[in-house]
Length: 287
Image 1 (cartoon, rainbow, N blue to C red):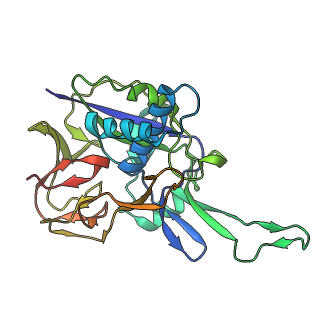
Image 2 (cartoon, rainbow, N blue to C red):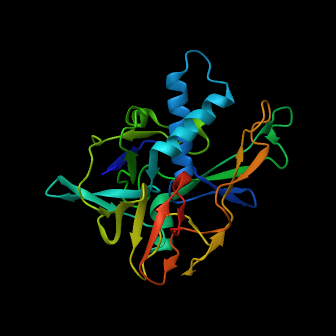
Image 3 (cartoon, rainbow, N blue to C red):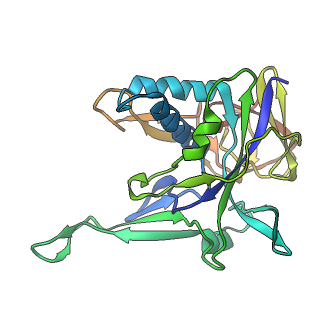
């Protein structure tokens, strides 16, 4: 085998915001961690660990970012609750947001409102009131600890120190306020089970040097998938983000991360399909 699979379990220690556009003055969050967000967190940590002094050279980040996409493949990460039996943990219950969207929002999503102040007037600065939605570190109904579960596939012979980097990751937005802090809670060891998320609907295998995810008919996809040639039921969106392409122009370049518009996670395939996992965890139909 040329790839090894690892199940990665993080404990969510603070609110997490995964940007999903703005509605009014509300910055919405995705209810899962995308592959690009995980890639960005790994890239940042690997670069800073390898750099003595200030890690301000954008070329260094690009070098490590390319290595992450070359040496690793990964799924998206989803919230989970520990299942308890007689006061002992018996695995995790994955909470996919599309199973029951209204219940998911009531249990896992909240928001934080703030504004800039005009101190001489003792009032809020006009137009600067904003609200940031977040994935809560504890469920809102029962106060249970929230975890994030996903899978990382490592290419044989890789010397990338991603496992060490996973010990000190911070993911998503609002990190300056301490958001997105996660703790790796399980030892990273290769798994033998080909199933993913403990479901018969999803399994993985390697083919022609790539990771293939098999999805059963009428099952929802759990990553963004290129819409080229793919029939599914659900919603589509362009998968874009802001990049630092030129020095001193942070976020001024808008980058497209799929070949075209993508089916969003939760979209349902009409028949059994295999997907190739490419950069940023985006799925594509095999060539």
